[in-house]
Image (cartoon, rainbow, N blue to C red; front, side):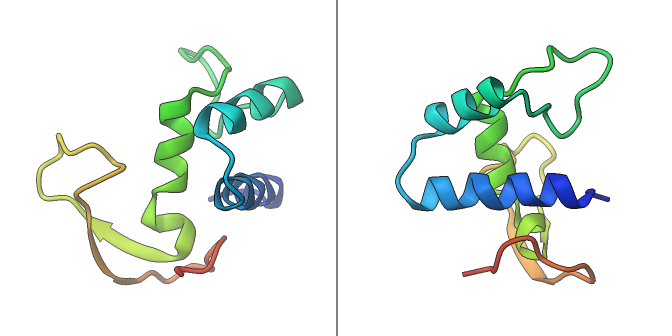
Length: 95
């Protein structure tokens, strides 16, 4: 479960992306701001990477939707089928 500060960061990431910022620009902003990656901890560099930003922004979960990828090798940014609404509050609207 995300804490409110993490949800706010995801909203800012989505707003910046929809305003035309590149994944690299958003990544640089996150790292300059000292915002730790969502799963920062042991075994991580503590830095954001463009592919991580893409993965977060393309996740169905942030828009309150359930998704399924029958092949676990599928890249999270593509190929997942939306199954329907989840039972959690969306961070951003599905639109």
